[in-house]
Length: 254
Image (cartoon, rainbow, N blue to C red; front, side, top):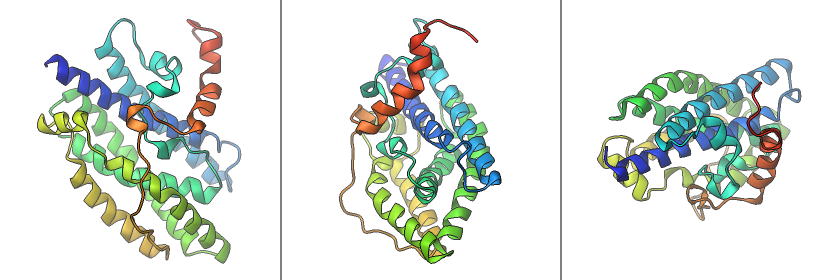
């Protein structure tokens, strides 16, 4: 593998890992605060799945980087500007409707991405995806079911979900952006074409929103910048909490 290809693959692995690391942390904030016991446990389990996927992806990135880089060092000793997650996943958890809408938008892409990545020309990424897609199929079913329950539920739950969908919509376009990294990896069959994923995502989202009696927002302005290290103020606050133990005791093992 050429140096350029290796660099692009490392960047892609960071993107996969950072999306799931940050979203997993956001979901973990619901532990002990879920609306019902079963959902409290479900959100905690999904958070653990995402953190496991993040550890796998960042571990592969660390191996390629060398010089002692590990999943832990990449998670706990990078600054916010070095993270490559989309802004959608770093937003505060909000109310339950906000969390579910955000989770569904992410799951609806992740399940198709991981399914396609099983055929990646990079066998390491293919192996990661083969495990992750099984978890993602449950995740999207879970969040999709809750979308319908909330949207087609009470007047209050419908209002809260519609507001969440409206607020989050401008963050969804970033999931499908292309750049030199994606172009290079698509050409080498490491990753799928984002435009193909977008059509599948849109079909799934449109179907679920319809069944949830939620109006699909119009495509207008979409935020951008997370993949190049431009984030909201929320990521820095979240990382300060997430990284404090590791940074306070560098090198500690437990």
